[in-house]
Length: 351
Image (cartoon, rainbow, N blue to C red; front, side, top):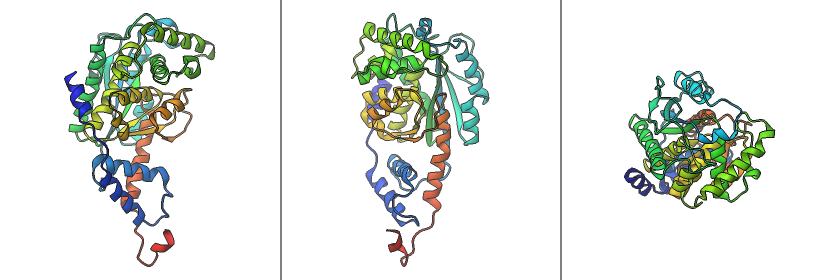
């Protein structure tokens, strides 16, 4: 808990001077004001995060992806076999997964972290921070103890800080865990107060006929555990997942170290909501890559008051949206750094 408390206490608002200098630079460039929209917004945020309007081209980037299994799988909330968590996470490490391919194409490294995959055998190329082999069934009681919830967050902080020491300037988050849209939806339901049936969707691979069972399971979990919606750690421990806690830690760790953090899709939104409950200032450091095609996505982002860059009808997770966003971020920085400036004679034409 000491690391979590220390990190949370050291998250400060963005640097307004850096933002203002970056805005002044945009005003000097040869395009009409505000015509590059979110590309401008990205560089303004980066200037505020770094406290410097000078932003380096092609900053070193990575996606930290966490994996964990879930006891709630026993309730029939996924039609995929639970063994796929381990099998697919091996592909995170060897670069053959969707996020691995997209990340490589966009000059981004993938750091894979096991927080709770079923099975004792370590996976080559994966950091072993296993808390235990999967969470407990949230339909019967808490997913994990409060100590385990804190541990998952602190492991996320630790991995984020390792990456920052290694020179990464932009960090995205990703995840893997069969049926983890169930705890993610439970988190959103608790924090928003919305009934699960209003926000429950098919996840990566669920037949529509199974959605009602999934929503009923989430409702039962919330009724049994009765988490306090204002307490992010309690919500995580009662209805969350280890990989969600890891992403919470990355968001908080990056924020405290003045590093921007790029969200992926729906599961990462739930992590952001929990991080926001722990320290609302962390929201200022978040860049949302895309609008997940999950039913509850718009509600989650409305609660965070954040807008996504893209809407590509994607719902895979893994960190795929974050990987795609890295190219847009690089493009925004390069445009900001290399576009020509207005001459004194022509400046009036661009105002």
